[in-house]
Figure 1 (tube, helix red, strand yellow):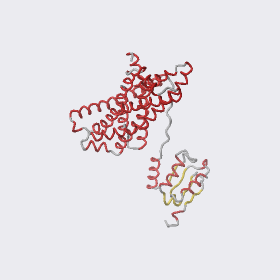
Figure 2 (figure 1 turned 135 degrees about the vertical axis):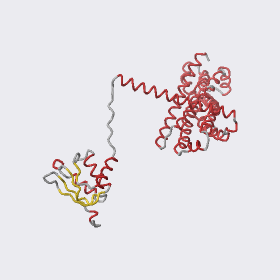
Figure 3 (figure 1 turned 90 degrees about the vertical axis):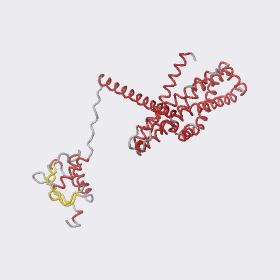
Figure 4 (figure 1 turned 180 degrees about the vertical axis):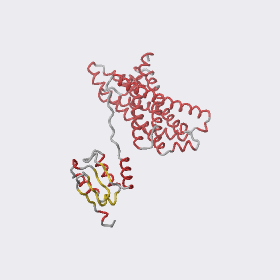
Length: 375
């Protein structure tokens, strides 16, 4: 075949047997012209495509033939004949490589099918809770081992994570709590002024922030900020096979990755809760002074006299539990990351949603519990 022939493609119309004879080179240089000519054929008069005179066939040409004759093209179902051994092998390879259209599963709307799907989701949820409990057990076991063998504990890593999850979160937590205090004071004063009970806005702010909103909103912010960070960091290590390398070197991922992160949250979340309480009270006091004329001295006096210390403890006792939930969810999600970026993004999103949902559920359980015991 000459160099001039390499870019020439020919097509003879269907003969009396319905055969279309192709000739020349069917390659990436001629595939566009060949597709136009093939698509212009009268499909009803074509029975087969004869490749015996084709001098050259590459992957692009094979793709054009296969897609036209076997993949719901205009010439669907037409036979390809006369291909040599190499051409036939190339056509088969391209045929196998083309994706097969997936048939959507038929939706079964019967009660039995619905019950089956419901049972599968419940089972998946229970298995997920089991996995989280297992990771909590890993953390507690490694923490106990670190107490028995202090040399294995990574103090430097703990300090680093305390800075990341605690110190760097102070501005956003304090600002959030301050604004919440301002909003509570403004909305509370608007309603209580109708009854001449403006002074009770102090009780409203104190109980709401100290008992519920301070620690709950702090935990939600930390869940969005820290659970995603834990998942991204551990998931990236999983993608780069660094965790496998740690195991090969005899390093325990639970001791080196889980314990410093979760313990840092366990230590810093109560401190962040205290900061949120102080910022929220300050915001409420400032708004009460501006809107209602309640001086800071009157506000502090009413706060001390009308607010029991138990409200502070009710709020802060939740912090360690919230910290364990957020840390365990983040570490578990990071270990579920596969070797692709899509998995990392999906698990990071799942970790944030799961952590926030679990924190809210835990807060509801705490509220019911404290109401039952009269605190």
